Image 1: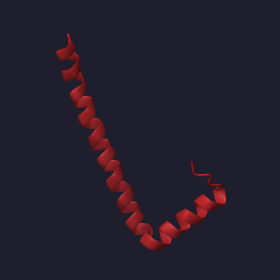
Image 2: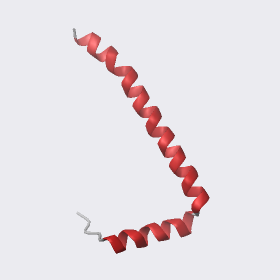
Image 3: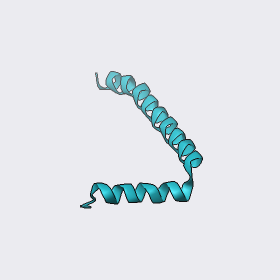
Image 4: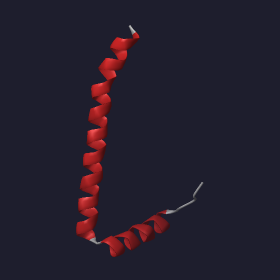
Amino acid sequence: MFNLGPWEIIAILLVVVLIFGGKKLRSLGSDIGAGIKGFKKSVKEDEPNDQNNNL
Protein backbone atom coordinates (compact mmCIF):
# COMPACT_ATOMS: atom_id res chain seq x y z
CA MET A 1 0.00 0.00 0.00
CA PHE A 2 2.59 2.53 1.12
CA ASN A 3 5.99 2.19 -0.45
CA LEU A 4 8.16 3.77 2.26
CA GLY A 5 11.89 3.37 2.21
CA PRO A 6 14.22 3.63 5.19
CA TRP A 7 14.91 7.34 4.64
CA GLU A 8 11.23 8.21 4.61
CA ILE A 9 10.65 6.29 7.86
CA ILE A 10 13.62 8.05 9.49
CA ALA A 11 12.27 11.43 8.37
CA ILE A 12 8.80 10.65 9.77
CA LEU A 13 10.28 9.51 13.10
CA LEU A 14 12.42 12.65 13.28
CA VAL A 15 9.37 14.86 12.74
CA VAL A 16 7.43 12.96 15.42
CA VAL A 17 10.28 13.40 17.92
CA LEU A 18 10.50 17.10 17.12
CA ILE A 19 6.77 17.59 17.56
CA PHE A 20 6.22 15.56 20.75
CA GLY A 21 9.65 15.54 22.38
CA GLY A 22 11.51 12.65 23.95
CA LYS A 23 9.83 12.68 27.37
CA LYS A 24 6.33 12.75 25.92
CA LEU A 25 7.14 9.84 23.59
CA ARG A 26 8.48 7.75 26.50
CA SER A 27 5.34 8.30 28.55
CA LEU A 28 3.16 7.67 25.50
CA GLY A 29 4.97 4.39 24.83
CA SER A 30 4.61 3.37 28.46
CA ASP A 31 0.87 4.11 28.38
CA ILE A 32 0.39 2.14 25.17
CA GLY A 33 2.35 -0.80 26.62
CA ALA A 34 0.22 -0.79 29.78
CA GLY A 35 -2.93 -0.73 27.66
CA ILE A 36 -1.80 -3.67 25.55
CA LYS A 37 -0.81 -5.61 28.69
CA GLY A 38 -4.24 -4.99 30.22
CA PHE A 39 -5.97 -6.04 27.00
CA LYS A 40 -4.00 -9.30 26.81
CA LYS A 41 -4.74 -10.01 30.47
CA SER A 42 -8.47 -9.53 29.98
CA VAL A 43 -8.45 -11.76 26.89
CA LYS A 44 -6.62 -14.53 28.77
CA GLU A 45 -9.08 -14.29 31.67
CA ASP A 46 -12.03 -14.71 29.29
CA GLU A 47 -10.62 -17.72 27.40
CA PRO A 48 -11.27 -20.44 30.05
CA ASN A 49 -14.88 -19.32 30.49
CA ASP A 50 -15.49 -19.55 26.74
CA GLN A 51 -14.01 -23.05 26.54
CA ASN A 52 -16.08 -24.33 29.45
CA ASN A 53 -19.28 -22.99 27.91
CA ASN A 54 -18.65 -24.88 24.67
CA LEU A 55 -18.51 -28.30 26.40
